[in-house]
Image 1 (cartoon, rainbow, N blue to C red):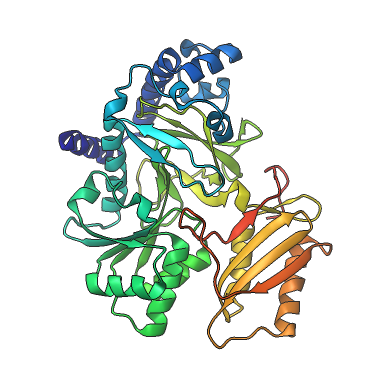
Image 2: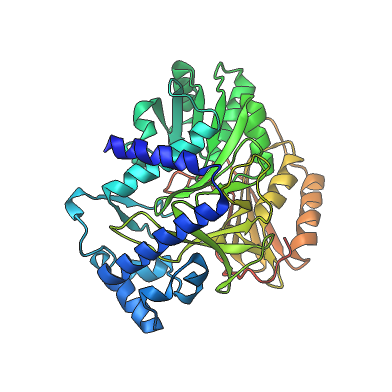
Length: 431
């Protein structure tokens, strides 16, 4: 109900400058309730906790979460959906959503109405804090499968959906006709639109841009910001938990929504220290229809030690480093966080409009390139690029460059710049 949505939004905004101890107490209370509910009502977790010798009373605070086993996406994809849904859930009033499947088989998530109200309010908090106005026209550039999934505030806004599968020319025409104040979309798609605006002198003139769904590196941020002439705010969320983290105007990191999710950064099951990389693992505190406890997202991030200069109480993640299968390895098996490296490399290579790097095996990288119209790649340029890549990945790395007319999107509609098919760990890093 819309009243519940407004109530959540009021409470969430009041949390922004609340005492951190109050937020921690609130989070622990919700965690205890969720763990008990999950143990008593979800067959999968009841069995999982029993096998680990854990009872709900063993989890009194966030610090006790380490007692519970981690849940992986592949683990729950192998069991019937009914084993994950709470036995007291009103399934008829729930909504089923599918994850993007960008790293494999999509996962079905079942959300109850209370969670949808809360999740919509979490998104609204982040957007309103960064300057969104209720009278704004918003253009949302994404996979059309998600066009009807907006919650809460998005229902009130004037908005236009633009499919990422349309040609760039058609996308620009739609934006020019709509004249949005705000654009929200995948970073790679907005990079292409920013280039089209710059090249064609388009009249599209947004005041704000929100990105999400893909890793936003420094170079792509600059390309989007300079192309559209406005500030870019990155958001990190997922179908399973809604919005997890978001930037404010300080751009000092990502505020974590601790009032809706417990987020851990793990390496081999142990919490990492601030400033260290860890696999992002989440426990939802509001979806009682299909709870997910210590669920691995397959994303990597770095927790921050210091609070944000903005004064908001929500703790920060220092950086996001993409998905586990966005991480490459050198020829010795060392981890290379490669998105920023290649973005920097190709930023200085002015003829490149778009790129994609694929690692099929430890000693082989395939680099796909789309060139700016009229640009050419000479042997000297290629040799310089190869030398820089081999300094990072090792002299034994085999490199194949492919000059293409088009780089295909994933079925999710995203344009991922780095994909690895080589399993990696987080312990050894050359990034």
